Image 1 (cartoon, one colour):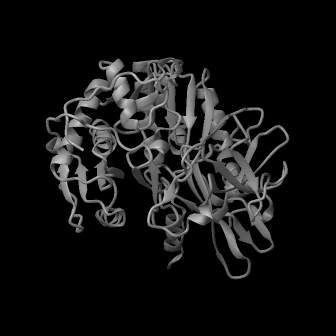
Image 2 (cartoon, one colour; image 1 turned 90 degrees about the vertical axis):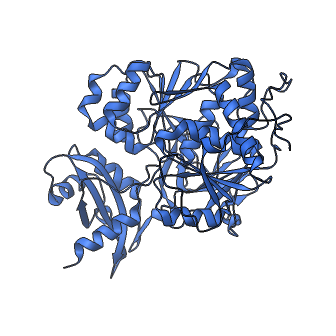
Image 3 (cartoon, one colour; image 1 turned 45 degrees about the vertical axis):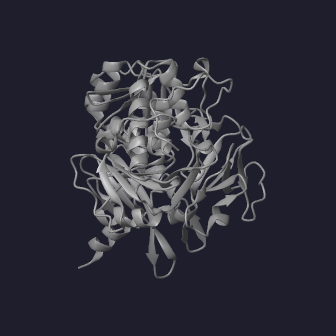
Length: 504
């Protein structure tokens, strides 16, 4: 590859891009002044994004980056413009982007750098260069940008474009590889078919280095609406942005939804512009979904069901208040199935493992030998247990790893959490299993209360909603629940907190 000046290819007869880089080039050619991302007071147009990404690619090439080399991208929520520039620049240079959050501990950064084999780190300018201990060089993205030469080529569609690490809620994060074809699947070069066309802006506050964050990056490239990447999430700030920009689409995770519902300041703002509220990362508790339906009265509530491993496979489920126990009915059941332990499809009503089918080149674990456990051809095991009813609504029973085996019973932590969320004095809650000398495991709960709430009062309330073996034997009251960058509750941390409280 030779470095080059801005290469604006002629319009292709293909209506789908072969890579995210090609999609950006197309939009920069046809909509150079259209804003792609707003972050704080900064704006990135498609033309500027393309020019800067090419400059990053030229700079990486000048520093000797070889095709296929990994480049870690260490950025925070306030750095979406630099991050987006670096991400496409790495891919434009033929490298593999490895997104990471700047909130990772130094030891975690070093582990991911070693595991991915990253040869370089692009990072935020005002933080010290990460102490990689791996021989990788590090620089802010603006220090890498160089004036491009001629002949800048697009990446090989079948080549590796990204390694994204899982959240690691139950152990060490796993690297998940994706080709350029995988990353660009579902995108379009046809302006008439662009998604999120019902408003001029969509809003999120998802962090860099998460699957939800990457989905927002793809939306910024592909959607008709301009992305607003909130540098931080607070309910009041989020509501102000909705009102100020007449935002039509909002994306949240359940933790954000719970905070929005619990903040009185949110109701002081005009939220009537929102027509679509999408939730991802985990299923919304039914009381939370119903609360969102009331708060955003003109919006359709949508649950997006996917994972880092399964993407771009995704089941879009419209929440129906008439079926509050279900996240919704999948738009299509062709690429979702419920199976037994051997992977055989189960009939309606029977609980089993949920699988999604990738519509394109599937992802894989990087440097792992356990692919067969999760990946089977284009089918990806989601790690959830659930069933479909006769009307096609999906009901999630639990994460397979979270099911509590208490004596002769199996307890769904999701069912316990749904009951906890029904109490008006509960802001947030999580259920988890703890060891028991006779039963093997028993139920414990961590609760964020609203005002005064006792364990006895809570258990009396739950007795009307849960069976005896489902009642929490331990209740831990906290000001907040530990969550990872993607908003998922870290149940292993809750077990440690409970152990600490039990010590004399």
